[in-house]
Image 1 (cartoon, one colour):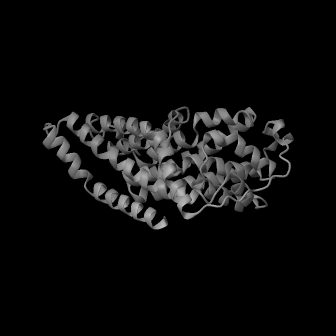
Image 2 (cartoon, rainbow, N blue to C red; image 1 turned 30 degrees about the vertical axis):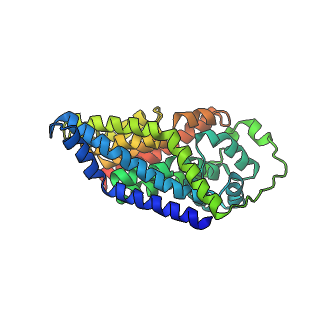
Image 3 (tube, one colour; image 1 turned 90 degrees about the vertical axis):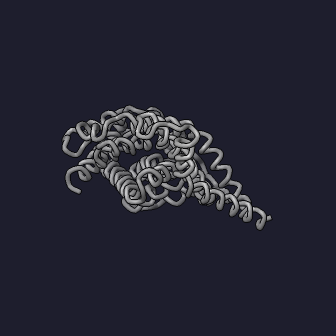
Length: 338
């Protein structure tokens, strides 16, 4: 049975490689030979971008998520919480942010995770490092960044995102802000909780990989299409260097403006990253683009609304301000120092 699964998986991987390596040829064939569109036309540029980038992103996403799904079979909320128990503040922040990258939690999990961490005696600052890293640096963001920007920008994004998560959580912990958590949170009693060790065979883990692909891609494919469609329109119709005037490194206000615009917006990585890639192509600076992307993904409006149920208003304002300041510093460093 394992041999059969392995043969099927390797066959699918071979098909994936062949298709991925020939995406440019296929997109050019569709645009130039089948549709016979005029080269250099605005619409042609937009359509070529859309036809090439859509399967590219979906293919990368499916492959990476498959392996992430297998990795996630080794994690659970209980195991994550147990791993963080008893850690000192800074060590806990580092571990929490790192676990946030690889664990399958999103904004909808914010309250139960927050409660579980508090009940286990995990410091508030450590909990926030996890909550900041989990949505900001996930497999969707990493795959899209790899596909659209390459490994250097992806690495920069991951390092700066982890730095923001760790430092923001550490600062929140140092400020001793427990009094600004809703009173009922500390009164909640979880009692003795046992961590059930779920046993998975290798076949089970492969199935989990496939199921994770179906679940995640099934939820976000529409955002990918919309994001790439907007990016394709900008690619074809926005003049070269147009964005440099308002989002370039020479515009001192570009980073704070991008954060102010980004924080109230709601989008996930699948929707915003294709748009950001075109903004950079059209003249936006890397620092401004990273700041905009992080503010949209890392400070999502739904998560803030959900967290309002467990945090008092002052704590929410402090949380958003600290994270936004970290994002601002990252953007300014990349624009004016590097």
